[in-house]
Length: 372
Ligand code: PLP
Figure 1 (cartoon, rainbow, N blue to C red):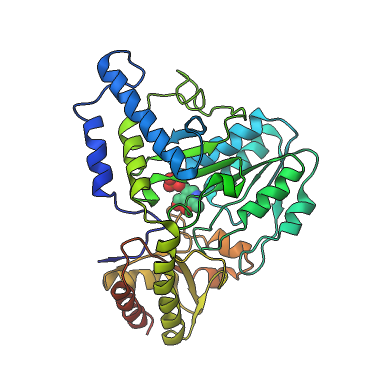
Figure 2 (figure 1 turned 90 degrees about the vertical axis):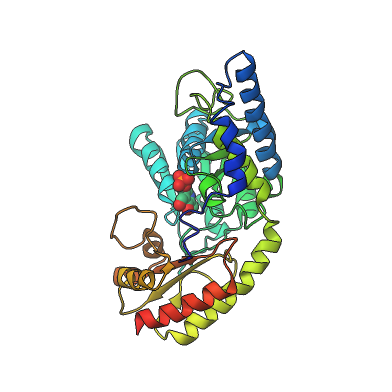
């Protein structure tokens, strides 16, 4: 099997699981307990927080462990919007992940927020000028993803955050697909909040964390014992925090790794476009993640291509992979102005840290076989 669905999830790194094991077995203490077992668990949790904070160049008190990207985005968006009531205006874009779209929808439906949706062009780009124009005196929060999970476009987060701050609003970025591939130094990015997920970087599903600047109040989603600096109640998942910190430590230098995969991905894109006449790359040719490659195949059916590829041992997904169980065309491609019929032909190949040139050569052969 050649696994080219790394944007959906990644295998857990052995080192991460091994580091987690003691905290699931002999060292099973509750980090809030005051006996030795609890104190050791607490220490492991806090050391993991320090390692995660270091990865993002943040302070440990600014890292809240979560169950993943969805919870992190919800906590950042809902938590910041409700606790920092500058006004009731939010800004985002329709190409965001459902985690962000649904959190914003909740604020609109249940808390009377007004939302401005920034336009995107045919390749998924957002214009900083459009953000400037949309910002208002009552804008509370802007949420724009670092890199898109279907078409790989990378948004100019530092510039967008700077524009947002000119009116005093807060900026959150969903960095789920960016971690491991792009520079995630929160100081360079100049952002107020960043959410990410463990299972995209070799940590277990259900692990993740969110960075939220310490000086901002956060309305928690979960109420209870006040763990995680009152930002997320509930007994902490020490083992997954340890696994997450270990997986982050194991990530290759993101620039070097992006360069390696960029080379592979360029050749793969060229090969597909040359050998499959109806293939068209979705999203931009520049300012994109090296590892996420979406194509449409006009006149064919995306689901059929996926099945044919799977029969040949190639695992990838349709453009709408995250809308679990849905056969609706990708909301991202629709936002880009694609015809729904063309959007239904989308196939996404997402490369990982273990993908090789030989894997991709085999995928091209299988794709040519699948569509002819
Ligand atoms: N944001 C993006 C861009 C994603 O790709 C995903 C997962 O696919 C999420 C958020 C949700 O992350 P999780 O699965 O950890 O909840």
